[in-house]
Length: 331
Image (cartoon, rainbow, N blue to C red; front, side, top):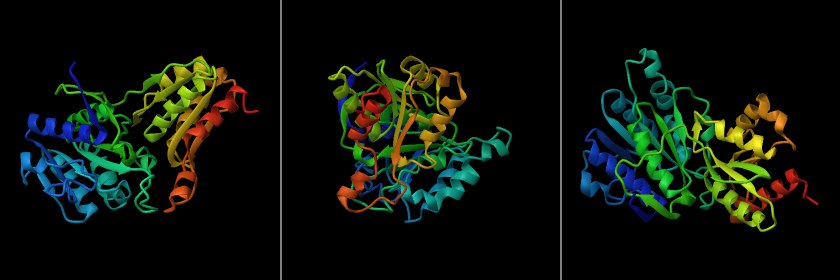
């Protein structure tokens, strides 16, 4: 398969462009996504290729954007919409939760709602409390939605193409700090990553770290540093958060006997608690040699100050300390 190096941002643009070339029913709408190219430059140049009828700048009204996307989906199109910041999905939650997520069920499977909501998330940009939230747990509590969160450029392309082709509403969470990340990406038009998969990113025997987004990047860095000390950490990436494939996580825990779950979203009520509960309810609990450790954001709004901003979300050193604790090396 032919590969090409590109950024996470470019991989998302390529995925959308490929699907719009393949299927004339795919349209794209959002605030400043056309001439301006999007708040983070993801859609730069797309309006030149596809025109204003398919790359549509919208009013500054997230309720209108999500509502129009749901309406377009249920009437035969395959729309993608972009929230400039994930935080703003709060304005579109009625259309997403009470319409898009419910219509297929309310019509006995006769209606389809093939739509994608792109959600730039996360802290680290200095954009403060109203522009830096990670609200993935909201979506994971809504039956009828699918929630994916790629952590590399290749995953971004493969998952987004699969999301666009899916007949259900998909929340596509993309961390803003990943936009500049470079990686090798398949340029095959048919390269997809199936929604519902969990990947083992690194093999290990001493402890398991489950992480996604920027925390996956930090987990991989921590694992490499720990390997220099003779501690082999297995890193597992549930790139589909809902519905999540727990199989690889459970298999890893049975092997290592130790589990750390790390996410940037607030720890209280976070997806990590659901993963921990499922492990506790399964036979995996009998394999545990140490208590499960959850690392998550502190229960405070994201600060503007850069030092405080970094202090409220888990860092690589926190992951390393957690591993030391579960393997008994915390002294």
